[in-house]
Length: 111
Length: 110
Image (cartoon, rainbow over all chains, first blue to last red; front, side):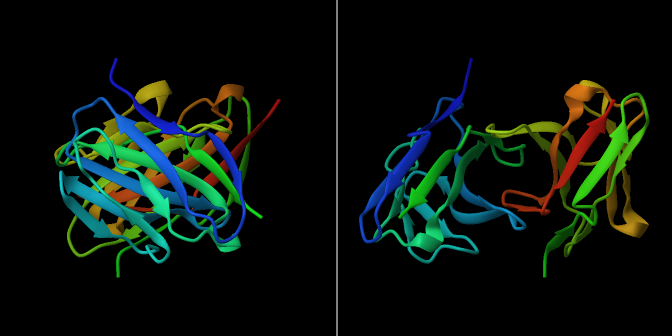
């Protein structure tokens, strides 16, 4: 079955370090999305991509970057981790106009 | 501005009772509408979606939702709640990108 996999599931790091969260989907979807989930805020869009070499900023993109070199992967990088970026991160993918399918999330703690 | 409002942060329902979770949205045009459910430590699972046509849509796990254009609402309903329905529920609207509500946590009492 097709799936979307996030790794690691949990990570603890220190402020100032670079962190990369992986997202891999086997749906062959063109669209991929990164969200963060914080209490009281629901899911907020960080970055998204509509295809290879395409990336776009979402509503909370400061301090984050993504790259899309193939259809399957959209890694999310925190260039210099800050405590405000402690959160649960979700990756999702969709076909054009279709519903989004979500991974199980990465819980990131920045100390 | 595009926004989704889920006015109830928490709802407690007795097992076997009916459920209605509210969702109102603000969007330039009539968007696609979705309800997702999230169990603790899990990702979001799609319950149902509305693209066009019949305004009453059926989903998985016995859930349904009704789109009311005049009220910009897409409320989720279930006639008889089971203890396993305890989770967080998110309404989302959009086309390619989605805007999510802040969620409603459902608690089910015995």
